[in-house]
Length: 171
Length: 171
DNA sequence: TATTGTTATACTCTATAACTATA
DNA sequence: TATAGTTATAGAGTATAACAATA
Image 1 (cartoon, rainbow over the protein chains, first blue to last red):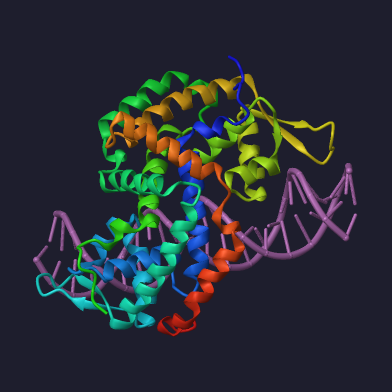
Image 2: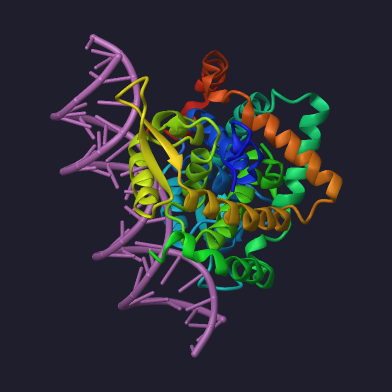
């Protein structure tokens, strides 16, 4: 039962690495998106509202991994600023389609350009080719299904862990 | 000022991609780390406590991107479970070195094995070679300085954005 | 009966400020 | 005076539950 030999056992931890990069992006993006409600997520809602085929709040919320109740507040704020509107869905009168206004499209475009510079800054430690590779691989991961939904595999992992639970107590 | 032609403008957004992967990891890791206080971050503190050279709370907090006040609670919980101890630092009596106990080392090792399976599950959409490349590039980014600290570049980006601010009001 | 969206409430998490003890 | 850590408080963010309208 030896201690970790290396000085920093975290450098092999995917969770730590993803967390560092995630926080770096959010911190940098927050500076650029200061005037936009909701920070990066408000921008992402606005981006979704700029898509060719408008979608309803629930669909956008699922895509962005946020609760639908939070989506209500985000859309409220964006609508109050005149950046998006809630359009009734002829096919389902319960549903509200979120659509960007002209001002919303313009606001999104200027933010997108600024965010691209932030992204370049974030990827600066990589060469141009490496950055392109990183984007491609990251997109593959992001667009694939979420591993949490691999219920069976997760259950097997947790079950295999059970015998060791006494190490941490039951609290 | 045309609407986005593609169906999903988010698929080119680095922030969206990193966010999706980050949430996927946290959700999956939470299942494996259910008994450990603080979830993935509690695990990361425990990992830091397993390092060869013990460090104090502030240094660990900075590495993990969490506030030092939060660190106090995390270490409290881990110490209560007997996984770490606060050892006085002979060189500076204000400082508390966080050191894993034998039980802490054992708990961390079993969790690390489970987390490796979670990581493999997360990276399943990639081939073996691609996954290795992704880890390497991600580590390079995570170990590099944070872009927020590139104060000058950030200021230039924000300044260039200023003329467009009227699109979003001043709230 | 299930689903979309809203509202109100409660909860968690995080940050702020004040304090102690060291340096 | 500045720093490491703690504590208490307040604030932001988030989730839970109940509700209305529609399917």
